[in-house]
Length: 284
Ligand code: GUN
Image (cartoon, rainbow, N blue to C red; front, side):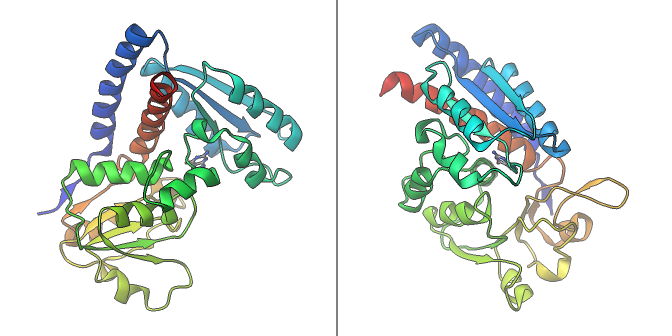
């Protein structure tokens, strides 16, 4: 029997619980978690993400700010804004939405964020903590996937976890988090030879390649757990994942749909990490 993962319900449950924790934080410490999202330019997908983040943060009782800047914003101007929020004690999380316009060096921007407020987990200090097996701020999509695997009681110990896609945002941090749970991890990518031989042996298959319907049933072992990070549009504009859902669902024991799988968990982890950063600001 295939079980379809309900990422939306899990996200709602965690966010409701978080809203309670925020109320308690306000009573106990007199603060609420503060999140600022900075968006440069008018990339339509980014605008949707940012609006969703804003809405979820407000709903959970956070202080939520969004800074919308024109495409013409310079690197120096953006860094000055980040530095202002680094100093602002009512803000515990700073997120600069990617991608940035091409004239801005994103590495330099990510380095400007105070690692303690880096709720995306992209600063090299946080990447280092993650690689040392002591994660602090973790990229939100892999963190959300780990929550899904935990909630659905997927046993990772000694299992073969295969990741397709080696991005800094998903693939690489995902590998480390799975290693921390004693999975045997194979990180594959667009140049991997004999991909299907590798994926066919996966107990857990995580797909973040960014190509609609890339994973067909020929790539999946019977009974595998399949997690689809993809967000693509088909030729009719419909949102589809990287996994050909209907046929792969027949083979998988557990599978995420798109939409309603990983996506809602990403924002949830962003809020959770902002809450944790706020808590550390008063308890450390
Ligand atoms: N663009 C796509 N995914 C992400 C993400 O997780 N964080 C940020 N900052 N930008 C993104």
